[in-house]
Image 1 (cartoon, rainbow, N blue to C red):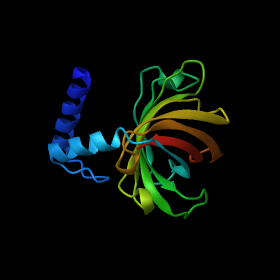
Image 2 (cartoon, rainbow, N blue to C red):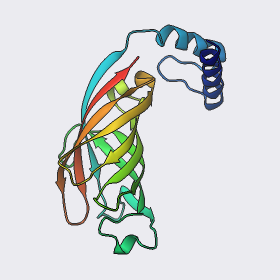
Image 3 (cartoon, rainbow, N blue to C red):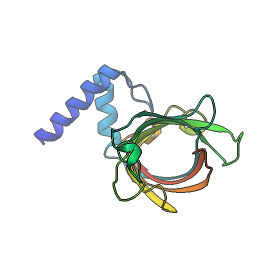
Amino acid sequence: MEKIKSILVTLVSLATIVGIAYGGIRTSPDSLEKWLTTHYAAKEKVTQLHFYVRDVISTPTPTNVVVASANTTSSSPTSFGQVAVMDDPVTVGPEPGSKIIGQAGGIYALASLEETSLHMTFTIVFADGEYNGSTLSFSGHNAYLTPLRQISIVGGTGVFAFARGVTSVTTLSSNSSGDAVFQYDSIVLHY
C-alpha cells in the first residue's frame, strides 16, 4: 500500500510540473489524485485503430533524417549503428493527400548485426477527431524487411491514459529512395 501511495504522489507531482490538462485531468494535485482514484479502478476499454504512417526521405523536406552513424555503419550490411529521427504524418488512408490525423515523432536505431531491424521509440500525437490531443507511445523491435511485425504500445495520454497494447505493422509500399508507407493495426487497452 505504501508503494502505491508513493507512486501516486510521484504521478501527482509529475503531472503538476508538466501541467497535464488532457482527458479531464486538471493541473492541481487534488484533481489529478481524484481522477487517478476514480479512473484507475475503472474497467479497461479496448480500442482498435487502423491508420497509416508515411515516411518520406527523398524530398527537400524529409520526415525522416539520419542524425548519427557509427564509424562502421557504412561497411555494415544492416547499417548497424545508424540513428535517425522521424516526424511522419499519420493518415486515414495510404494514398498521397489522405487526411492527416496526427504525427508520429521519435527516434530509431538500426540495432542488429544480422538483419535489417530497428529499435524504435516514438509517439503519435493525434490532431483530429475524437482522439485530438491524445497520444500513444510505441517502443520495440521492428524487423523492417519482415512482411508483418509487431511493436509494443507502452503508454498514452488523454483518451489513451495508461495505455498498453500492441500494433501490427505492414509495409504497404517502399521505393529505392527510401520513401515508404506503413499500415498500423493497433489494439489499445486503456481507461
